[in-house]
Length: 373
Image (tube, rainbow, N blue to C red):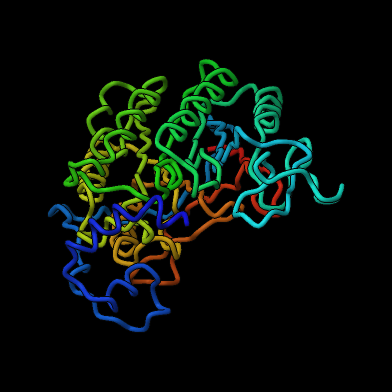
Protein backbone atom coordinates (compact mmCIF):
# COMPACT_ATOMS: atom_id res chain seq x y z
CA UNK A 1 0.00 0.00 0.00
CA UNK A 2 2.73 2.46 0.98
CA UNK A 3 4.79 1.84 -2.16
CA UNK A 4 1.80 2.26 -4.45
CA UNK A 5 0.44 5.40 -2.81
CA UNK A 6 3.65 7.27 -2.03
CA UNK A 7 6.29 6.24 -4.54
CA UNK A 8 4.36 5.24 -7.66
CA UNK A 9 4.87 8.63 -9.31
CA UNK A 10 8.60 8.81 -8.82
CA UNK A 11 9.17 5.13 -9.61
CA UNK A 12 7.31 5.48 -12.92
CA UNK A 13 9.28 8.65 -13.67
CA UNK A 14 12.55 6.82 -13.08
CA UNK A 15 11.61 3.59 -14.88
CA UNK A 16 10.56 5.48 -18.02
CA UNK A 17 14.04 6.97 -18.26
CA UNK A 18 16.17 3.93 -17.41
CA UNK A 19 18.72 2.52 -19.81
CA UNK A 20 19.46 -0.67 -17.86
CA UNK A 21 17.60 -3.97 -17.61
CA UNK A 22 15.94 -5.82 -14.71
CA UNK A 23 19.08 -7.77 -13.81
CA UNK A 24 21.07 -4.56 -13.44
CA UNK A 25 18.26 -2.94 -11.43
CA UNK A 26 18.13 -5.94 -9.11
CA UNK A 27 21.90 -5.84 -8.63
CA UNK A 28 21.83 -2.10 -7.99
CA UNK A 29 19.01 -2.14 -5.43
CA UNK A 30 19.43 -5.53 -3.74
CA UNK A 31 23.08 -6.39 -4.34
CA UNK A 32 24.78 -9.78 -4.24
CA UNK A 33 21.51 -11.71 -3.89
CA UNK A 34 20.93 -10.99 -7.59
CA UNK A 35 24.16 -12.69 -8.60
CA UNK A 36 27.32 -11.34 -10.16
CA UNK A 37 25.86 -8.80 -12.59
CA UNK A 38 28.10 -6.54 -14.66
CA UNK A 39 26.72 -3.00 -14.52
CA UNK A 40 29.19 -0.70 -16.32
CA UNK A 41 26.68 2.16 -16.41
CA UNK A 42 27.09 2.52 -12.66
CA UNK A 43 30.87 2.21 -12.44
CA UNK A 44 32.81 5.41 -11.90
CA UNK A 45 35.92 6.79 -10.26
CA UNK A 46 36.63 10.10 -8.54
CA UNK A 47 39.61 12.16 -9.66
CA UNK A 48 42.36 13.12 -7.25
CA UNK A 49 44.51 16.21 -7.67
CA UNK A 50 48.14 15.63 -8.76
CA UNK A 51 49.44 16.16 -5.23
CA UNK A 52 51.60 13.44 -3.64
CA UNK A 53 50.29 11.81 -0.50
CA UNK A 54 52.29 13.07 2.50
CA UNK A 55 54.65 10.56 4.14
CA UNK A 56 52.90 8.46 6.76
CA UNK A 57 53.87 9.40 10.29
CA UNK A 58 53.44 6.84 13.11
CA UNK A 59 50.63 7.92 15.46
CA UNK A 60 51.80 9.61 18.64
CA UNK A 61 49.53 9.21 21.70
CA UNK A 62 48.57 12.58 23.21
CA UNK A 63 50.03 13.51 26.57
CA UNK A 64 47.90 13.15 29.67
CA UNK A 65 47.78 16.94 30.03
CA UNK A 66 46.78 17.67 26.42
CA UNK A 67 43.66 19.79 25.93
CA UNK A 68 40.57 17.86 24.80
CA UNK A 69 37.19 18.43 23.22
CA UNK A 70 34.17 16.84 24.88
CA UNK A 71 31.75 15.79 22.16
CA UNK A 72 28.17 14.52 22.35
CA UNK A 73 27.02 12.22 19.53
CA UNK A 74 23.26 11.77 19.07
CA UNK A 75 21.64 9.82 16.23
CA UNK A 76 18.34 8.38 15.05
CA UNK A 77 15.99 10.13 17.44
CA UNK A 78 12.91 9.07 15.41
CA UNK A 79 10.67 11.17 17.61
CA UNK A 80 7.01 10.13 17.25
CA UNK A 81 4.59 13.01 17.95
CA UNK A 82 1.68 10.54 17.91
CA UNK A 83 3.02 8.06 20.46
CA UNK A 84 0.27 7.21 22.97
CA UNK A 85 0.77 5.38 26.24
CA UNK A 86 -1.50 2.34 26.67
CA UNK A 87 -2.12 1.69 22.98
CA UNK A 88 -1.33 -1.56 21.20
CA UNK A 89 2.45 -2.02 21.06
CA UNK A 90 2.28 -5.26 19.07
CA UNK A 91 0.21 -4.29 16.05
CA UNK A 92 0.47 -5.58 12.48
CA UNK A 93 1.87 -2.35 11.05
CA UNK A 94 5.58 -1.40 10.84
CA UNK A 95 5.08 1.17 13.62
CA UNK A 96 2.81 0.76 16.65
CA UNK A 97 2.00 2.54 19.94
CA UNK A 98 -0.45 5.01 18.38
CA UNK A 99 -4.15 5.70 18.80
CA UNK A 100 -4.70 4.36 15.28
CA UNK A 101 -3.47 0.98 16.53
CA UNK A 102 -6.30 0.82 19.04
CA UNK A 103 -6.17 -0.06 22.74
CA UNK A 104 -3.89 -2.84 23.91
CA UNK A 105 -5.68 -6.21 24.00
CA UNK A 106 -3.93 -6.99 27.30
CA UNK A 107 -1.71 -5.13 29.79
CA UNK A 108 1.32 -6.96 28.43
CA UNK A 109 0.62 -5.51 24.99
CA UNK A 110 0.28 -1.91 26.19
CA UNK A 111 2.70 0.82 25.14
CA UNK A 112 4.69 2.05 28.13
CA UNK A 113 4.94 5.58 29.45
CA UNK A 114 8.57 6.02 28.35
CA UNK A 115 8.45 3.91 25.21
CA UNK A 116 8.43 0.26 24.25
CA UNK A 117 10.89 -2.37 23.08
CA UNK A 118 8.58 -3.47 20.29
CA UNK A 119 7.84 -1.66 17.01
CA UNK A 120 7.56 1.79 18.58
CA UNK A 121 9.49 5.03 18.31
CA UNK A 122 10.39 7.60 20.95
CA UNK A 123 7.70 9.59 22.79
CA UNK A 124 8.61 13.24 23.27
CA UNK A 125 8.90 12.89 27.04
CA UNK A 126 11.62 10.26 26.66
CA UNK A 127 13.68 12.37 24.27
CA UNK A 128 13.21 15.39 26.56
CA UNK A 129 14.24 13.42 29.63
CA UNK A 130 17.30 11.98 27.89
CA UNK A 131 18.46 15.40 26.69
CA UNK A 132 17.87 16.88 30.16
CA UNK A 133 19.94 14.07 31.66
CA UNK A 134 22.76 14.73 29.19
CA UNK A 135 22.67 18.48 29.80
CA UNK A 136 22.83 18.07 33.58
CA UNK A 137 25.38 15.23 33.59
CA UNK A 138 27.65 16.78 30.95
CA UNK A 139 27.41 20.57 31.30
CA UNK A 140 30.87 20.98 29.75
CA UNK A 141 30.10 19.66 26.25
CA UNK A 142 32.07 21.57 23.60
CA UNK A 143 29.86 20.67 20.66
CA UNK A 144 27.30 18.12 19.44
CA UNK A 145 27.28 15.79 16.43
CA UNK A 146 23.71 15.01 15.33
CA UNK A 147 23.72 12.37 12.60
CA UNK A 148 20.17 12.30 11.31
CA UNK A 149 16.92 10.34 11.12
CA UNK A 150 14.42 12.57 12.91
CA UNK A 151 10.92 11.42 11.78
CA UNK A 152 9.23 8.23 13.03
CA UNK A 153 9.00 4.97 11.10
CA UNK A 154 5.43 5.50 9.81
CA UNK A 155 6.82 5.73 6.28
CA UNK A 156 3.50 4.77 4.67
CA UNK A 157 1.79 7.86 6.15
CA UNK A 158 4.43 10.56 5.89
CA UNK A 159 4.06 13.82 4.02
CA UNK A 160 6.44 16.67 3.37
CA UNK A 161 4.52 18.83 5.82
CA UNK A 162 4.70 16.23 8.60
CA UNK A 163 8.44 15.68 8.16
CA UNK A 164 9.15 19.41 8.11
CA UNK A 165 7.13 19.73 11.33
CA UNK A 166 9.27 17.06 13.01
CA UNK A 167 12.42 18.75 11.71
CA UNK A 168 11.41 22.10 13.21
CA UNK A 169 10.27 20.58 16.51
CA UNK A 170 13.46 18.58 17.01
CA UNK A 171 15.70 21.50 16.07
CA UNK A 172 13.82 23.65 18.60
CA UNK A 173 14.14 20.87 21.18
CA UNK A 174 17.91 20.63 20.71
CA UNK A 175 18.29 24.41 20.77
CA UNK A 176 16.39 24.74 24.05
CA UNK A 177 18.20 21.86 25.74
CA UNK A 178 21.70 22.95 24.70
CA UNK A 179 21.69 26.75 24.46
CA UNK A 180 24.92 28.22 23.20
CA UNK A 181 26.46 24.84 22.31
CA UNK A 182 27.40 24.38 18.62
CA UNK A 183 25.52 21.57 16.92
CA UNK A 184 26.71 20.01 13.67
CA UNK A 185 23.92 18.04 11.94
CA UNK A 186 23.89 15.50 9.12
CA UNK A 187 20.93 14.42 7.00
CA UNK A 188 19.31 11.01 7.56
CA UNK A 189 17.44 8.85 5.05
CA UNK A 190 14.08 9.30 6.83
CA UNK A 191 13.91 13.08 6.51
CA UNK A 192 12.45 12.96 2.99
CA UNK A 193 8.91 12.02 2.02
CA UNK A 194 8.76 9.43 0.59
CA UNK A 195 11.50 7.87 2.69
CA UNK A 196 14.84 7.36 0.88
CA UNK A 197 13.80 9.70 -1.95
CA UNK A 198 16.66 12.13 -2.60
CA UNK A 199 16.71 13.23 -6.24
CA UNK A 200 20.05 14.59 -7.47
CA UNK A 201 20.20 18.29 -8.42
CA UNK A 202 19.44 17.58 -12.10
CA UNK A 203 15.82 16.78 -11.14
CA UNK A 204 14.00 20.12 -11.31
CA UNK A 205 10.32 19.22 -11.61
CA UNK A 206 7.74 18.48 -8.91
CA UNK A 207 10.01 15.71 -7.61
CA UNK A 208 12.83 18.14 -6.77
CA UNK A 209 14.26 17.86 -3.25
CA UNK A 210 14.58 21.64 -2.89
CA UNK A 211 11.67 21.70 -0.43
CA UNK A 212 13.77 19.75 2.10
CA UNK A 213 17.23 21.18 1.45
CA UNK A 214 15.97 24.77 1.65
CA UNK A 215 14.26 23.97 4.96
CA UNK A 216 17.44 22.33 6.27
CA UNK A 217 19.39 25.45 5.39
CA UNK A 218 16.96 27.62 7.34
CA UNK A 219 16.92 25.34 10.41
CA UNK A 220 20.63 24.50 10.44
CA UNK A 221 21.45 28.20 10.16
CA UNK A 222 20.83 28.35 13.93
CA UNK A 223 24.24 26.69 14.34
CA UNK A 224 26.05 26.95 11.02
CA UNK A 225 27.56 29.99 9.28
CA UNK A 226 25.81 31.50 6.26
CA UNK A 227 28.79 30.46 4.13
CA UNK A 228 27.54 26.84 4.02
CA UNK A 229 24.16 27.77 2.56
CA UNK A 230 25.18 27.14 -1.06
CA UNK A 231 26.24 23.51 -0.56
CA UNK A 232 23.40 22.74 1.88
CA UNK A 233 20.80 23.93 -0.65
CA UNK A 234 22.62 22.15 -3.47
CA UNK A 235 23.15 18.76 -1.83
CA UNK A 236 22.71 18.92 1.98
CA UNK A 237 26.46 18.72 2.70
CA UNK A 238 28.83 21.31 4.12
CA UNK A 239 32.28 22.06 5.52
CA UNK A 240 32.87 24.33 8.51
CA UNK A 241 35.98 25.42 10.40
CA UNK A 242 35.24 24.72 14.06
CA UNK A 243 38.46 26.20 15.42
CA UNK A 244 41.76 27.13 13.79
CA UNK A 245 43.30 23.88 12.57
CA UNK A 246 40.12 21.79 12.99
CA UNK A 247 37.29 21.28 10.50
CA UNK A 248 34.06 19.24 10.37
CA UNK A 249 32.71 17.99 7.03
CA UNK A 250 29.11 16.76 6.94
CA UNK A 251 28.19 14.45 4.05
CA UNK A 252 24.80 13.58 2.60
CA UNK A 253 25.01 9.80 2.62
CA UNK A 254 21.70 9.44 0.75
CA UNK A 255 23.73 9.79 -2.44
CA UNK A 256 25.07 6.32 -1.68
CA UNK A 257 21.70 4.93 -0.52
CA UNK A 258 20.77 1.94 -2.69
CA UNK A 259 17.11 2.46 -1.76
CA UNK A 260 17.22 5.90 -3.36
CA UNK A 261 15.57 5.02 -6.69
CA UNK A 262 16.74 8.26 -8.30
CA UNK A 263 20.30 6.96 -8.39
CA UNK A 264 19.22 4.39 -10.98
CA UNK A 265 19.16 7.27 -13.47
CA UNK A 266 22.73 8.30 -12.74
CA UNK A 267 24.73 7.20 -9.71
CA UNK A 268 27.98 8.87 -10.79
CA UNK A 269 28.97 11.00 -7.80
CA UNK A 270 25.54 12.61 -7.29
CA UNK A 271 25.72 16.37 -6.73
CA UNK A 272 29.50 15.99 -7.26
CA UNK A 273 29.65 15.47 -3.50
CA UNK A 274 32.73 13.26 -3.37
CA UNK A 275 34.64 15.48 -5.78
CA UNK A 276 33.77 18.44 -3.53
CA UNK A 277 34.84 16.31 -0.55
CA UNK A 278 38.26 15.78 -2.13
CA UNK A 279 38.60 19.51 -2.76
CA UNK A 280 37.80 20.29 0.90
CA UNK A 281 40.25 17.67 2.14
CA UNK A 282 43.00 18.85 -0.15
CA UNK A 283 42.46 22.42 1.04
CA UNK A 284 42.57 21.18 4.64
CA UNK A 285 45.80 19.29 3.93
CA UNK A 286 47.40 22.41 2.45
CA UNK A 287 46.28 24.41 5.52
CA UNK A 288 47.48 21.83 8.05
CA UNK A 289 43.93 21.22 9.33
CA UNK A 290 42.58 18.04 10.88
CA UNK A 291 39.11 16.91 9.82
CA UNK A 292 36.24 14.97 11.38
CA UNK A 293 33.68 13.57 8.92
CA UNK A 294 30.03 13.08 9.88
CA UNK A 295 27.13 11.47 8.03
CA UNK A 296 24.22 9.08 8.46
CA UNK A 297 24.57 5.78 6.55
CA UNK A 298 28.01 4.27 7.28
CA UNK A 299 30.13 3.69 4.17
CA UNK A 300 30.49 0.00 3.43
CA UNK A 301 27.06 -0.72 4.92
CA UNK A 302 24.74 -2.92 2.86
CA UNK A 303 22.51 0.15 2.30
CA UNK A 304 25.40 2.06 0.68
CA UNK A 305 26.22 1.47 -2.99
CA UNK A 306 29.44 -0.48 -3.45
CA UNK A 307 30.82 1.89 -6.07
CA UNK A 308 30.25 4.87 -3.78
CA UNK A 309 31.78 3.06 -0.79
CA UNK A 310 34.79 2.06 -2.87
CA UNK A 311 35.44 5.64 -3.95
CA UNK A 312 34.94 6.85 -0.39
CA UNK A 313 37.42 4.25 0.86
CA UNK A 314 39.99 5.52 -1.64
CA UNK A 315 39.46 9.06 -0.35
CA UNK A 316 39.96 7.98 3.26
CA UNK A 317 43.17 6.21 2.27
CA UNK A 318 44.53 9.21 0.41
CA UNK A 319 43.75 11.69 3.19
CA UNK A 320 44.42 9.46 6.20
CA UNK A 321 46.77 12.08 7.68
CA UNK A 322 44.04 14.76 7.51
CA UNK A 323 40.92 12.80 8.54
CA UNK A 324 41.29 11.81 12.17
CA UNK A 325 37.83 10.32 12.81
CA UNK A 326 34.41 9.69 11.25
CA UNK A 327 30.96 9.56 12.87
CA UNK A 328 27.79 7.93 11.51
CA UNK A 329 24.43 6.52 12.64
CA UNK A 330 21.63 4.63 10.83
CA UNK A 331 22.17 1.11 12.21
CA UNK A 332 20.72 1.95 15.67
CA UNK A 333 23.61 -0.01 17.18
CA UNK A 334 26.73 1.06 19.09
CA UNK A 335 29.46 0.06 16.64
CA UNK A 336 32.63 1.11 14.90
CA UNK A 337 34.30 0.50 11.53
CA UNK A 338 38.01 0.23 10.81
CA UNK A 339 39.54 1.35 7.51
CA UNK A 340 42.71 -0.34 6.25
CA UNK A 341 45.46 0.63 3.87
CA UNK A 342 44.43 -0.66 0.44
CA UNK A 343 48.08 -1.58 -0.24
CA UNK A 344 48.76 -3.08 3.20
CA UNK A 345 45.67 -4.69 4.69
CA UNK A 346 47.47 -5.22 7.98
CA UNK A 347 47.67 -1.48 8.65
CA UNK A 348 44.61 0.40 9.94
CA UNK A 349 44.38 3.97 8.63
CA UNK A 350 41.13 5.31 10.09
CA UNK A 351 38.10 4.66 12.26
CA UNK A 352 34.39 5.42 11.96
CA UNK A 353 32.26 5.52 15.11
CA UNK A 354 28.65 4.43 14.55
CA UNK A 355 26.45 5.87 17.28
CA UNK A 356 23.48 4.13 18.93
CA UNK A 357 19.93 5.33 18.39
CA UNK A 358 17.77 7.39 20.71
CA UNK A 359 14.72 5.44 19.55
CA UNK A 360 14.21 1.97 21.09
CA UNK A 361 13.00 0.71 17.69
CA UNK A 362 13.29 -2.21 17.98
CA UNK A 363 14.42 -4.16 21.07
CA UNK A 364 16.95 -1.48 22.00
CA UNK A 365 17.70 0.87 24.86
CA UNK A 366 17.99 4.57 23.96
CA UNK A 367 21.64 5.58 23.76
CA UNK A 368 24.11 8.36 23.08
CA UNK A 369 27.88 8.71 23.06
CA UNK A 370 30.38 11.02 24.70
CA UNK A 371 33.82 11.34 23.10
CA UNK A 372 36.96 13.00 24.40
CA UNK A 373 39.12 14.16 21.51
